[in-house]
Length: 179
Image 1 (cartoon, rainbow, N blue to C red):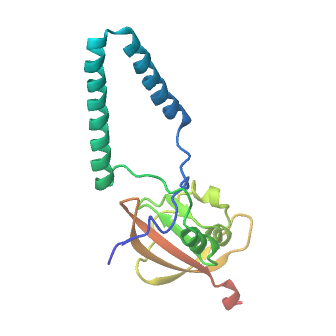
Image 2: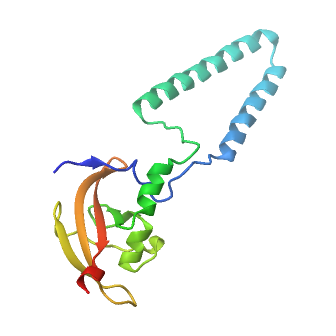
Image 3: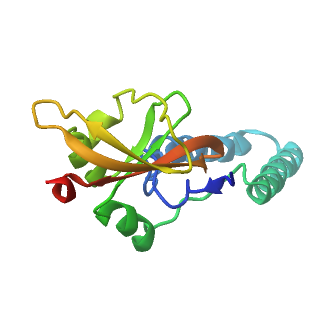
């Protein structure tokens, strides 16, 4: 069974535009100001050596950042979320769940919450267990908390999520067809 990479197709829990850390920016600014003030108190002959040392350190950090970015270790956040990515999964009338192999929910769209009778946030804390059938369509009965059971068509495929193996379950409420 082919493993598909869908971690880019659906945002992981808590994913979105990164706002960064103002504390980290302020710390770097403070270090640069302290280094500049420190250079005022050293002799003119030593200042050249300190400036060369700081430039060498900045060059090492820059080269490391370039290699880390090329290797995929360091990523810059996109300023705007991809409307297609968020719109397809979020607007789907079919439920979409991504779980790890232990059955912990990594992602759930709003339709999955409606079909399973839980809010999307609750689903992220509900252990679902492992599905019994992979790669083929199965019909299951979902016992919703405080509601009537629903007949659901489920198909599960293996995927990669954030670089780790996971399961993607698509859920379709077929209760109306049965009635």
